[in-house]
Image 1 (cartoon, rainbow, N blue to C red):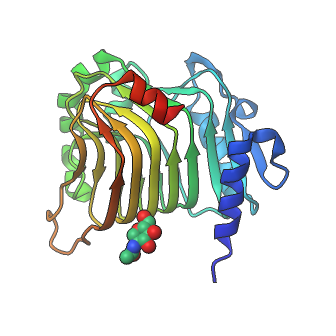
Image 2 (tube, protein in one colour):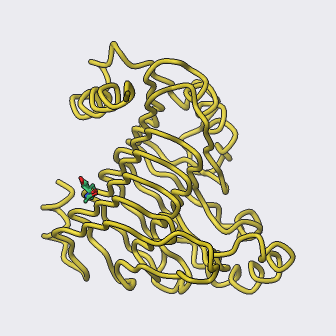
Length: 268
Ligand SMILES: *[C@@H]1O[C@H](CO)[C@@H](O)[C@H](O)[C@H]1NC(C)=O
């Protein structure tokens, strides 16, 4: 029996109609948890508090990020959640810190783990700081060394969004930007997850736009713009003999390279 699916569809419809019509969905505005839209104040804790509140609610919930720039350090949004469906509605831009030491200890910037039913709708992720990329690759490797055996299929690569151990995740209308000289930076990484959709996104990073790791099943990628990085890759498999394979990946109407007009069509 699956009671969560109708709830999820309703949330996405409400999200498209605008947030005012969401009587069935409980809304958590990150500003109410102390987030500051000035691009300078660290809002990581506020986002985590909003997540905890939404995750702990037994209703369908929406975390709303209004317009503005939000400085976010490395953050993991984890389940299990009571809420049957959480929508991250982002009208603003999430900005990575320029100081590489903040992110350097971690492999991922924003990750979702162990959640069942999440939509990430809209928004931009901005990690343009070339200082970050220029400095953090050697630092990252050194710092990760003692733990690297636990990471198995993840190497010292940096990912913007990681979806690991999740089910029913919907990513739509998200723009990801990193400097072109960020050689080890992927856009979205999916692994050990089922039923993930990535639709109408624009991903500009130095490396893979979407990378697909072991245990990915029923992944749907449609109308995603990639570039100047390497595109979509299924990689880093077979490092562990017991790992699961990749099954049923659909890739439709994607575009690699630069075209402002195409981007306007896809995102608009
Ligand atoms: C493959 O995945 C898609 C969703 O991405 C799903 O609709 C379809 O039923 C799956 N096909 C099989 C054979 O499991």
